Length: 331
Image (cartoon, rainbow, N blue to C red; front, side, top):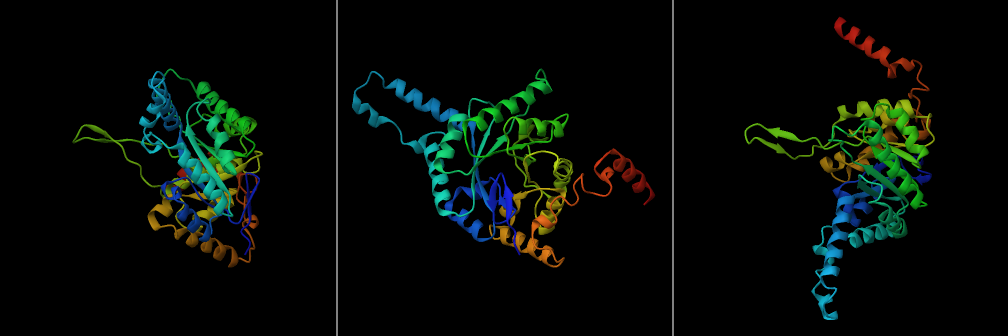
């Protein structure tokens, strides 16, 4: 069984990718994921705020000692006391790129077009074979209109893609008035791939404590339906790779995304729930599903049920919504 896949112009041994998460912060874990069948790994995100905070701390320290003797340099705290140790993260990229045979994808998370460019270049120099931009912007200001939000995304993608030679994927949420048109614009701005979809942080309210609670829940299979919809709609209609993320727990979930048209399928929640070896479960399960049907590779099913290939395209559209509601009332 040959699971070879192309993503962002890179050759992967499998369409299964370990997406950005805490497990990927250790080189030993990355080696285990490769051994369990991952076709690529995305390293934990570096947040723009962390980089800005570190830079501000360094500038404050340098300025405060400008009129001191040279010996004062020894008073500077070690890098580990900063808000974020960028050198350690770059070291992880370098070590992973050297130790692994599968592609290593670095991840940046931010909200402006000025916060990432220099560090994106540093990641490329450290050995990252691709970049994933996780644009995490919640327009909580009601005076900001949709056009301004879209321009921010496009400015970020253009700035980073212009600064590096490696391919850039963009991880976005579904909250655009026209996600398909936005996808086209992102590709025009320089994106080589799209990751659908980001799961925005959603706070909860504790009515007993009268407080806003911070929590992050792992994804579940029912959350697959929205990314399946848009991957199915976009597959074959934009000149970019498509990565599916959210809700992957079983090999059948991987198959669904591939049938919709995803080039790769990413997961973090299933690995956090079940351990790193669950990557092997997904990989073996995909091989078994294909093998029992006499199929030789993911290419044999990729996009077979996309909007452009399905026998009834209305299954992705409003007509099917109406039909579903009508049929439900008859059950």
